[in-house]
Amino acid sequence: MMVIFLYVTDNSLSVRKISLSGTNAVSLAHNTPDTFDTVVDITYMKNALFLTNHMTVSSYHILKIDLATGNESLILSTSSRLGGITNDGQHLYVSLPFSRRIVKIDLSAPALTNTIGSGATGNSDGIGLSATLSAPSGLFFKNDEIFFASLGSHNIRKFNINNLEVTTLLGNNK
Image (cartoon, rainbow, N blue to C red; front, side, top):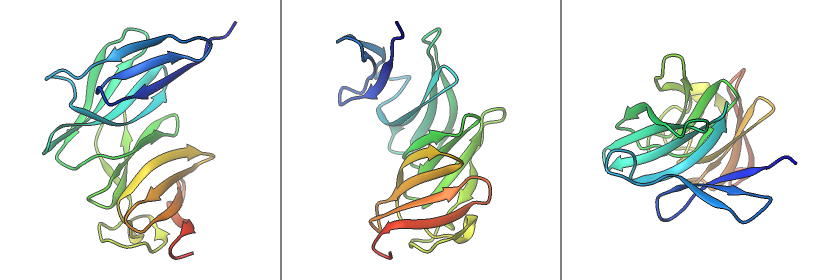
């Protein structure tokens, strides 16, 4: 029988593994002074969980939890506030709500690479850095496209990871 797990974060600042075939809930990671303060979002890729979190008001991290060993490791640290996280099977994509951008992270040499969003507040569609965003959050990947909420302009938008075209699907300017 195949066991399916759901990974969630909760208000106790933990990451939990829940068996969907029963009622088991196992804590994988807890808030400790040297790991994380607040988990913002979580994504699964290649038998690992990747988390965006806040350590302090000026220190934000992307962490990896290896599901085979339970080991936690720091992928990168930044002074830019992190939001949603998703992946395409090879790269991570993270929203920077206050910088009004979505960035790509290559795990072979972790660094934030601006992918979409000019940094100016707005809701104009465009290609890559010419598009304007307003508090992007809630990233979801499917079929070479990343869907996201633009909280500041109350829109649902997407961009194609190959040509970086940003399109508004639903909301104020549709």
